[in-house]
Image 1 (cartoon, rainbow, N blue to C red):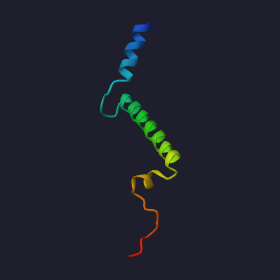
Image 2 (image 1 turned 60 degrees about the vertical axis):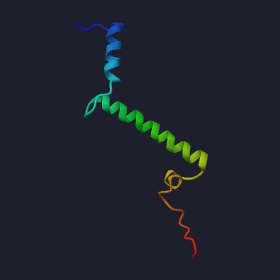
Image 3 (image 1 turned 120 degrees about the vertical axis):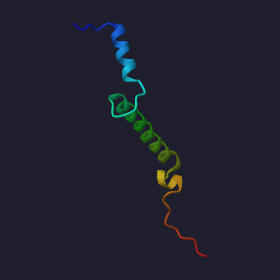
Image 4 (image 1 turned 90 degrees about the vertical axis):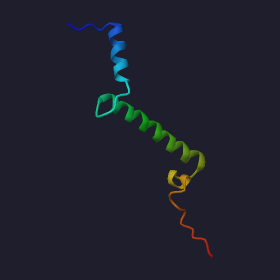
Length: 68
């Protein structure tokens, strides 16, 4: 029989947040958390700089070719 004591809940929460590599539920939770941080960071860059993330990093050019 399983009981839902605070100690059992804390043990489950610690296991859920453990940094375990491989294809595990813990790894998927961390993957989702880091993806959310990256997505919010990309939105913040676009809001504050008024240009896309690729333009901000210099990966995508503006399309203007300098005349030599």
